[in-house]
Image (cartoon, rainbow over all chains, first blue to last red; front, side, top):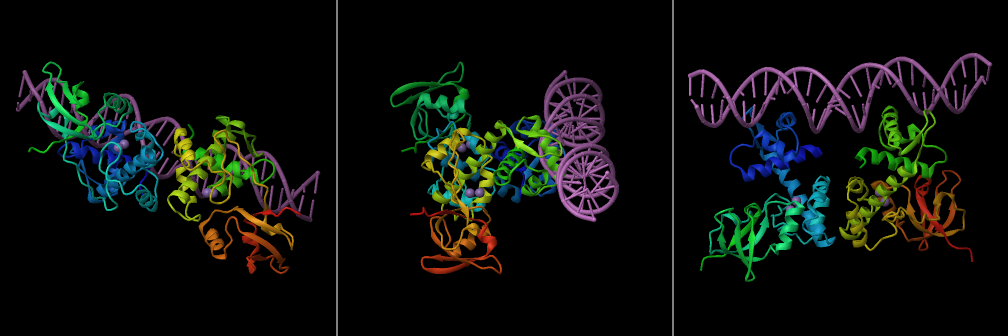
Length: 221
Length: 221
DNA sequence: AATAATTTTTAGATTTACCTAAAACTATTA
DNA sequence: TAATAGTTTTAGGTAAATCTAAAAATTATT
Ligand SMILES: [Mn+2]
Ligand SMILES: [Mn+2]
Ligand SMILES: [Mn+2]
Ligand SMILES: [Mn+2]
């Protein structure tokens, strides 16, 4: 259907459109794919020809409905394979992203559905990201980034917004994994780092790390 | 390491060298890969540069030790994924080959080893083919093709030498699957078809089908 | 051994996905 | 609003993997 490369473009465009408002810019796509703006322009023309994106020169792009469905299919596969690797093959959460980057391009819808069944129709991947069902539907999680939470608030870690191995290993060492309950003890004025209470233990987390931890706040009683 | 395409060439060269004596010819590779002889010549130069094959113009090729190891690695992955698809995801043996053709190119040695472990270190794939271990070693099965067996002999089906879906579905319908005991009741002179006894039932199998069924003969008592 | 048939290689193109450098456009800001 | 900074596109090229058609080499047949 779509080439390996086209799928990667669609996925990156989708991810950027979820985090930044407005149309998706050429440079943003280039940095997301570790390629150059000129290459991106070439591919945008191709994706527009295939009606996967709406593209106006110099104005950035948006996914068409067709493009969005294709992107979500790739993301579904990526996350299901990550669950497989962690749940069945006993990989750690920091080891699976790169392998899933390859597996996500395997082209067989029956395979995806059988895998989903085999895994027990999981709703979240090992990083807390929602897994779209076969129709592309999923529940976006109501989360807030750790660095944006006010002092005194409590919450539960429900995900991360970076998947790199060094970052995840760092979190593991700090004991900041999915499901852990935290309380904001304070925010350091000098460097923006966050003081946390985890199981009555004080932990300091840099602002850069806090930006990539997703938290669900405790319901106000 | 090696590209998707290079891996496919190595695999096909390996398979041809197992079935036909002497060096592997350009045309044989072309037909095995559904491509043209001119394209094969181009790639042979590239594989020779990489020291994966020994190539003398007009004389065909042989795999170097390095090339053989690479080919066997791909075959190991192909067969392990086929076991995964049948044993874990409940695919039928006729559905798995094409999906495994894609999965075999996923590039992660830790993934292969974990998968092997998860599957319980299987020795054979769903078509009866041996699965090389991580060092590339495997027991080649002492088999004979069904059409070469003399009248009166008995044996057990241990594999097939064609993996196409129509062929395997046909065998399934005839009840000629791996592990089934058969006796040769006779060979029809007119068309070379084979008369079999399976569970005291008479079955006629065309010569073409018989050529692709691998049998282990019963030990002479 | 000469000729014919077959196989293989070369020559020259094409397609996809990249690249660099320069030109064109848009946004900023003085 | 004009200059400047930043972004995006175009122009022209490369590398991988294909192709067709023609030339060269090998093998088979008289
Ligand atoms: Mn991931
Ligand atoms: Mn993930
Ligand atoms: Mn197979
Ligand atoms: Mn097989």
